[in-house]
Length: 409
Image (cartoon, rainbow, N blue to C red; front, side):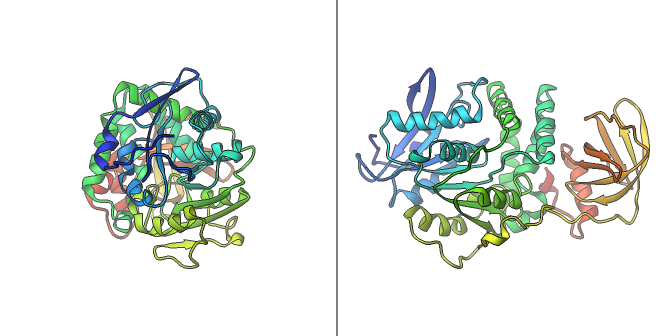
């Protein structure tokens, strides 16, 4: 591997190196303090809507101690090559082929969100090529609510409803109930919303393919053997802390830490709290017993974290109206209601359609609703939060302090 030694953040938007493997184009940039560096490189793998420039601070932080490689596999980041026939496992194998062709030593991947699935699979399938593994926003996407939200996003894209898709995706990435905690500014939130709204047709198709890979993923047959550090934002609703903890528990030698005042984008929202853990971890040093801005979970805690990310309380006014786009409606009773979902009872048909539902409650705007489970206890549901005004009104009703208008816009 020939590393560039002239790193500057401006280079992250320059054309990448391209390595072709079996017809697949892998885009990468590689930096170090020396051109030929035998040390294990850090490999950065981003999530949806991220590019090399998203990692400017991380590259600057890591370069004094490690070589750094940024990699975009097909359909990732700035790599526009579509790859509908490749599953997550095949993409992970491309990382191993990349390392082999460039004769790299064992890698230290940092995988975020979608990139975390690829990094974890690479480590599990190619243990000899992975020295250490750092993950954030990781899940096997087995949680029914997460799957329904992904499926709804795909359906909205198929129908050309990009505005509703963007609003729902934004609420998954940035928890609107904790903006004051996470410090996400209205300017950043609106910029990310615009970025999603303005996806090109190719970018939309890449998102479709990546989401379908996640939905098709049957789960990990084996877990990483190398030292592993899992970072979970304490307010992450999309990939919840208990999912991070359960993944860590399944690994051979993993630590899991909750990052305070962070959600799905913990690495960017709480850079110093995350860096205080990943710096010693990547250096092979023991993690600090206590670290500002985070809490390390003990082994006995990993399988005992609360699986509900918000309290679900019985509303004072329980009667509501459930309506379907076909024109039918039912009077129902809400037994649990939260910002992200709830539970209702009513005389509903057993074969409920999966989409097209609206919940009318009190004086609030109608709220789009997705059924999850229909059983004796009632209908469990999630809100896709595709309507900004309805989301804002619901949050203001459920939580004592109303959110600023920018929270759901």
